Length: 128
Image 1 (cartoon, one colour):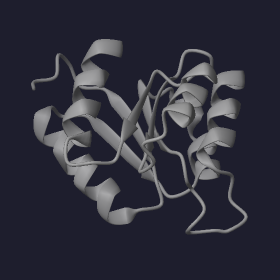
Image 2 (cartoon, rainbow, N blue to C red):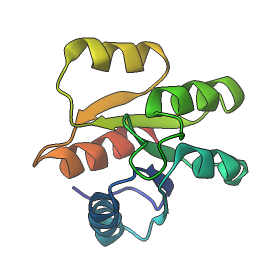
Image 3 (cartoon, rainbow, N blue to C red):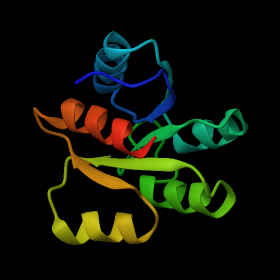
Image 4 (cartoon, rainbow, N blue to C red):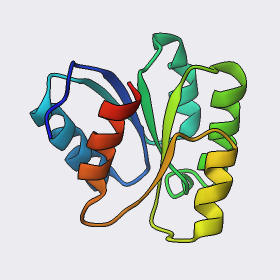
C-alpha cells in the first residue's frame, strides 16, 4: 500500500510499543509527520496544528487513571475540530462499540489485530 502524499498524523494511545511500531510502519510508506501522544489531553493541546488524521485508542487510561478515555476525547475533537478525521482503534471486537464510535464521529473503527496497520494505512489513503 503506497500513500498518495505525506500527511500529518497524530497517534493517541498509551501502548508505547504499539505507537512506535505504527509510527514506523506509516513513515516507511511515506514521509509522514507522525506525532505520538500517550493521553488524549496531550493530543487536544496540539490540535491547533491541524492533523490530517488522528488515530485514537478507545482505552486511554493506563498511563494516568484520571485521563479521559477515547470516546470522551473523540467527542471533544468532533465538537471543536469538525474537520478532523478520526480512526478509532481498540482491542474490542464489539459491533456495538464500533457503531457507537462511528455515530459519535469517528471515520472508521479498527480492531487491534495483525492486519490493523494495513487497514489504517488504507483508511488514511481513502479519507485524506
